[in-house]
Length: 235
Image 1 (cartoon, rainbow, N blue to C red):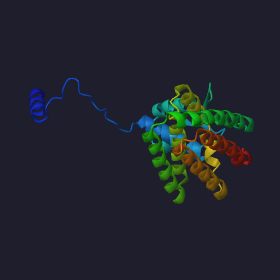
Image 2 (cartoon, rainbow, N blue to C red):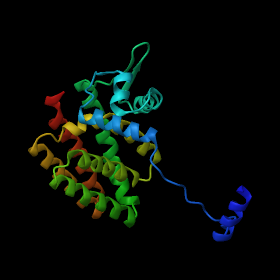
Image 3 (cartoon, rainbow, N blue to C red):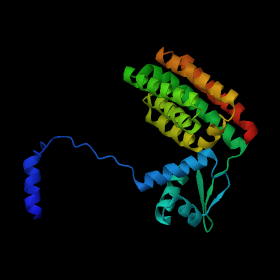
Image 4 (spheres, helix red, strand yellow):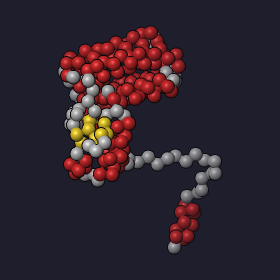
């Protein structure tokens, strides 16, 4: 029976050439879904800094067993969002004001360098992709959809760093950016600070499209220094 079905399928669908590139099948997995959901809960403050994560209770809330939950927590621990404490389980990482200021200082230096390199090395297609993300981000801003705005905001920063063409820079910036998600999210709590962040991004995209390296470097650094002004009172 199986051979007959195989013969029918072979007859209906010609075999691909041996050297043909096979496109991977992309589908959401439970693991990725749980990681994304927990990351969003931490970013939005549903799991506050210092909160101990009760696996049974959280698993019931999310409708998953402890195994995918624990695997997801390991991923978040590797990103610096969660601390795995021996004999006590996981808890959401807390950052001191000094932690935050130190990381923003380093991020500013990294992104300042990336801005110069991006203007030298970016392809026109790469710049166009950032413009597309920027325009979508503005749509979420107008709709006051803070979480989707924030995710596009983070994508833009990552994509702009990637345009530098420097893998070490991409890696270091990515590690710090992952730990700063909650902090940068709360920087947009007020209308004034949110509008200011949008204005910063308008300057950044303008500088990138003009391939003005020093202008983009300064815009990126200033944006991060202003982030400290927006979040310090909440820490």
